[in-house]
Each structure stands twice: as structure tokens, then as C-alpha cells.
Length: 292
Image 1 (tube, rainbow, N blue to C red):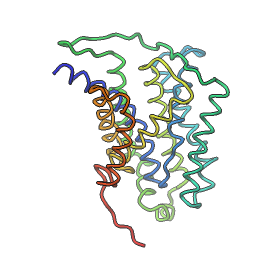
Image 2: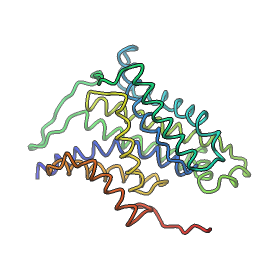
Image 3: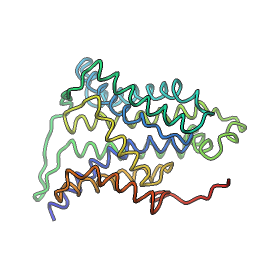
Image 4: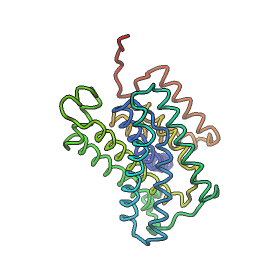
């Protein structure tokens, strides 16, 4: 029983990171129907910015987290303005290819300036481990899970009750109707990108603290898995993205626990294929027939 609970804790920690990333994917897709494959690289930039704010400016954890989130929110807005907005009325395949291009561009720029080797993430908080009846939990694990829940609650409040949140919901339903009602669509889309970028940066800082290591390619695999998590939960649905992240974290953790660590990525991608075949709308998604 203790082993099961220990694996569940590890799954919740990993699922928390996937959930933060998946929320960014699902918000952007819900508004402009774009899969932002550069989102994983914003996650990576958040980790590198965390190192900068910690080592160069010597800021404490909470300021490192907030500054990294603010910086990546701005970076995401710039990516949308430069790379995606000019293609707003182009074909979806053009926007998709551009997103992949931005992803590779950010990877290679960071590799060029910082090298491909792993870098140590600073110890912003001293690691303390607690033992409850044979179950070991660290303060970093509790911090990751608690921060994720707090950010999800904040995001839900913003989307449901704020003026920009209501604008986001209106644009996601009908872009043209929202514009006719006086909503600034461009500003609303930029706001969605900013929220997604901030959440990705939080994930980057937290995962850097957890593994104590970062590199320019660190965003690729988590970014792809977070996309799978968004599809699993129901892409375009915010609660679905969070649910998908935690479910995926559990799948991956328990695959490792039964000796399939070498197959965990294959299991995740196989899960995507199964979901697309069996329930393409995702766990919380509803199948809607499209008129041709």
C-alpha cells in the first residue's frame, strides 16, 4: 500500500507539470484553433529565466517564479504577434507549420547561446523530506502540487469572472460575433497567450527545482506530452486539460513502477492513438457534428 501511495504522489507531481502546460495548449486552441507547438519551448525559457533571476539577480523563490511567469507571458505575446497574427486568416496548416518552426527556432537559438549541455538549477529552497508511515514526501513535491492547484484556481477565476475571461469565452464561441459586440479580438487572443506563457514558465521553474537540471531541449518531450494530455482531457476545455495532465502523469509513473521505464514514451503516444480512435473529443469533450 505504501508503494502505491508513493507512486501516486510521484504521479501527481509529474501530472501537475503536464497540467500547467496542457492548459496553455487548450486555451489557445479553444480561441483560435491553433496547436501552439512552441509552447514547450516557452516552458524551457521559463526554466532558463529562473536560473537568471536566481543566480544573477539573487531573487528568492517567489520572485523568481513571478518574474519568470511575467517574462514568458510577454514572450508568448510577442510570438503570437510576430509569428501567428499575420497568419490569422491563412490555412491552418500554414499556422501549424509556423508553430513547429518557432519551436525549432527557439531550441536552436538557446542551444547556440548556452550550449546543449545540462545546466544546474539553483537550490531556491532547501530540500526537506518528510516521512509519514513509510511514505516519503519532499517539500518540493508539496510545493509543485500546491502551486499548480493555486494557479489552476486563479486561472478558473480569471476565465469565469474577469472581463478578459468573459471576452475569451465569447471569442472562443464566435470570433466575428464577439468583434461585432465591441470585443477587441486581438487583445483577447494576446491575453490568452500571456496566460498560457505564464503557466508554462511556472512549470519550467518548478521542474527545474525538482530535477535540479535544465537544458535547451527540455521543453520538447514535456510539450508533446502536455499536448497529448490536452487531447486526452478534451482540447479546448480547461478542466479537461487539467484532468488529462494528471491522468497522463499517472499512466507514465505507473508504467515506470512496473518496469516499463524504457517504454513509457511509447505508452503515452499509444494512449494518444487510442483516444483519437475511441473518443477523439477527449474525456470531457463532446462530439459535435460539423456542417460541410
